[in-house]
Image 1 (tube, rainbow, N blue to C red):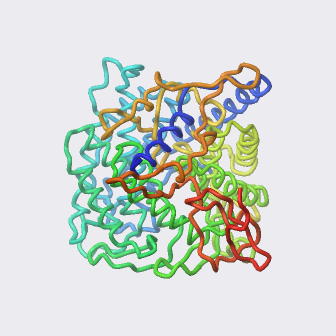
Image 2 (image 1 turned 90 degrees about the vertical axis):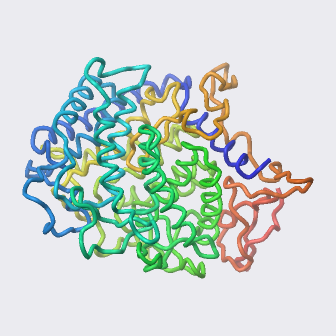
Image 3 (image 1 turned 135 degrees about the horizontal axis):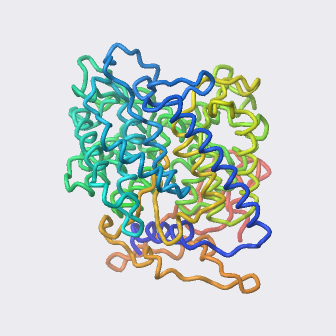
Length: 575
């Protein structure tokens, strides 16, 4: 079996497992699911209604003062010298809320929002904005909402919708293109929506900033037939992958004009996170061999050089030597990605460590020093981030373990206890004192509330396969977009097994124990063992360990590695 097919069947089986028909469950959990989903619904509308009352059509709500901020052009502590007085916001939070409204079944409000945006939103404004954030929030929100609005199974805006959101999305996409006009094809981090790249614009960007554009821009090309958007995003991705080290690691920041690294420290947190996420999710969405050939070695390199037991530190991309021993809140997305990759055991292990830090402080601090077991002294905030809720949702879908519902309930209770105010939900400035900050980020509605709701009510996913962008916007897996879409993507071909007293239970990819020892690459009579992302890659002999879990599973024999008395990994324990 070719490397591509090893990967695609892992993904296919996981999509079967994750986003298909609801599974019959123990009746004792039904009441909890209903109660908790209703609690999340109330959270969402408390945030949404306050935004619409006090901040709309500006970008985001300031819940303590019941006012607004045009945060889309203020991201990254941007000085506002390039912000025109004509800029009155982009209705960012409304755009981010569109798919959440659909998932929660509020079609009438969705239709009202779509019609307002169709008639009032314009991107012809003199505003310098962050390309990555505008892509994942605004472009992603628009293309996802367009797809939902034209869904043949539920046309929610009949008679009124004439592809206006797609027209807006295409207009925005065209305004992105000047950012890609560099010698390397790597885009500038900032672009003026009206005038393109400003004179003397910074040439510094992040790995995630230029390597996490392919989902939204790829879908825009598929919807419009204009290949420029997908071509630009893929060219940047190819350039970035070509800059990897011999260890298949990438740094954090780089120069878009020279293609040189500025920061060599590699990790899975801020500045790099969504690069890994988009390689796998774009592979699922488009089925490109090229994307899988990037993701597989990239994931294995993370497991080899950045993983330490359930934690992930940062390391020099050139040597693999540890640089920073820290947990950042953005890293909490990783267990969800591991579920999609098939590494559910690894996902569960990492997730439990993130949740242990959440329980310690009541929320997840932005940066936690693993070597000292303390919060970073200057990054004590929690801006209502969704990543832990996201991974909890994926792990529950993969395992149906009710413990993850308990985790979700704990997250919901913490958010209501510490962040809910009369004017919405406020970010936490200092998790040690629970001092609040006057900001309700749009991703609280796009992701945090959405994933918590889906954890307890996944009816939106019945009969559908979706990929969620890094901002939580659903994109459907369609045969027309996929190079070679196997029949198993089609809901009618899915099979079920009857277990546990006759109750119907969905097939779990993990129950199949996919192992590279049984997946061989046959080529001209030559058999080659292929490493699977379902297993931890062989660790070097000098890897220090504390227990067997640190050593993982051998990637070619599928045997558990053990930790010797001297603290080194080896294959002494055979299973």
